[in-house]
Length: 388
Ligand code: NIG
Image (cartoon, rainbow, N blue to C red; front, side, top):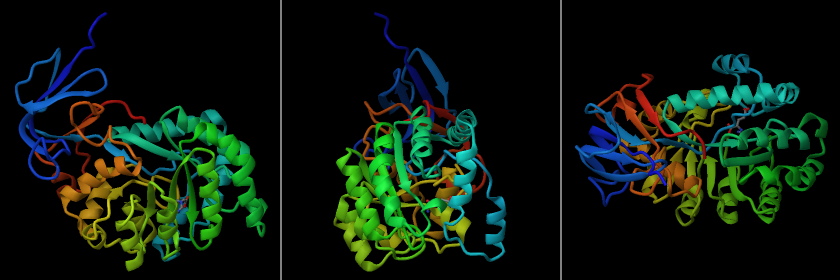
């Protein structure tokens, strides 16, 4: 049997392992280092000069784990740039545009939706993302939700059923009937293609009781739990996520002291989506308050056509550092090990022996440049495929 080829990334100026046992500080940083990769996983990290079959010269650059983007809505058709333009002129965001995308997505051919997903994934991979979660949520009927998940599962193992995203037009005034559909026929069609279930807990979307019903049904069907909560106000979503043991509650833009206390005493990760707060003119989260309380945090792109049309994790890092009180080290952790925790994974988001060999080589000597040089495409090379 032939041995898989090995590759060394050598001459690394600064290597982030995310294992404090391997290097300096919480990020476990090694200077003047090398990283040896096997077919799929990390074989070794250590001083520069390691030998392997193939060699990539990092030429003094920083190398960090590939980004783990734990919240996206990539399966959609259509364009909502006019909605964004009106928002920048003062219109509030209320999530109602989800129906516009639902109309466009339902009308799109499957091949076209898949082509659009591939384009967005290629864009994310070029920008350093190597693990990505993808939600449904723009089908809002049995066939189109199942179709979105089938498209998503061809690209990632981190697929999420979000039938409870918004009430579709045809169910106006009959929210409880729609929740019955989501928890019945729609869940049965979606579950074979989904790892997670999610719901949008917000005024104008679904209330706490409706979301609880959805989460319980998903758990009974064997799915892991996640929730959209506290995006536009204190919706009760954070408390519900903690009560149900969700892996993550996402947005967390508006948090009470009680929410933070509940998160701190739980295994639920608080996932911040700073690009959504940017694009909807919401206030930025005071992440300092959350982190200092001992909550595990993640940052994700929330790529979607309405509230956050970006795949750029670097952009999210820059906002988190400039506007949310996070240090650069904390923001980099949040998009690597933080994202991994939000997906309950320990094989990604770190460069330690045995973890997946997903890495990013920057065109910069340190990860600080991700915030210091906002808007500059600093990813020289993404190593490893994009997927689950
Ligand atoms: O996470 N808030 C709910 N869902 C998406 C936005 C969807 C849209 O506006 O199309 C979000 O921000």
